[in-house]
Length: 431
Image (cartoon, rainbow, N blue to C red; front, side, top):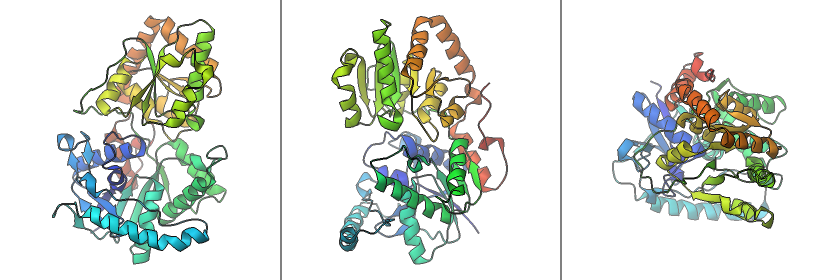
């Protein structure tokens, strides 16, 4: 009888670094939590030390250090990831790779020894369904190994974006783009059905498939991600500013377009308008720090504050008290921060990137990502008319029942797996 398994390898590899998950790891965790509630899905991690999958029993809710879910394995068991395939030849790398692989495998076996007896069980996935929401490069690692062993699983992956295949992305990181394409080609060639995190990403997959960048595509189903920011029992250990502030989450220079936000603040300063604080939440990025420290931003530098790795309790408080969430990206696959802000009831100022319009519907306010004056005008309006802002917040709060929860996402995945059409695979009407 065919069983359905859910891959927690992405979360396993992030284990031990921090439990304040964002992006893809967060998606894996949230969907996994909802699937665990069904009782019809089993959970696995891939161990690169063994070249095999092991079934695990996730810890949920207060039993998990995340407050949501984790694979139930000690941080000390977290493996070192070593890439298994390369799209191009490199004589030096290819010569030393077997030795490096042997050393890394020995290290990973020692780390695996920290797993208590009886916590994991070897599992044979031959002929079974595997739902995988992690990065393609993680899937490519284990697909390489199971091909070698002759295992044929029924893979149902979710693709988060095709951004590295665009000319504007990673101009100085050609190897990343090459690896990304190779990984996605491998994942797609093994997939029984492909899921995407938005209608935009589905159109991207179709486009790059039509021009030959990707192999022949199986059925592709859009299952848009959630807006929901789950409340957890994590502690609130930061002080929320009393003065008005804008908030960005994971915003960097380049594609994420931190430049537009800083330039909008400079516009307000030059116009003699009030300049709110700017909180930049997320992992430390020296690139962003160096950028805001440039001399030309001296008039507003004291307005900018970095918030390192906030947990979900802290994120909720930051969103709730913000003047607005700003997400200025040139391109996104979905846009979790915008959805989270709307879920909490906070105005969202978003670029006109297609995926962000999916997330924000008619609840968000939009600006061209290359026009900081448009963003500055939105910010000034929010500050200048508190009454209109409260009306907007009330409309956003009233729309929460129409926003997507993580349960919606999990149900959409299961429905796609059963091959049935359902409203859950398309964004709900926000109006």
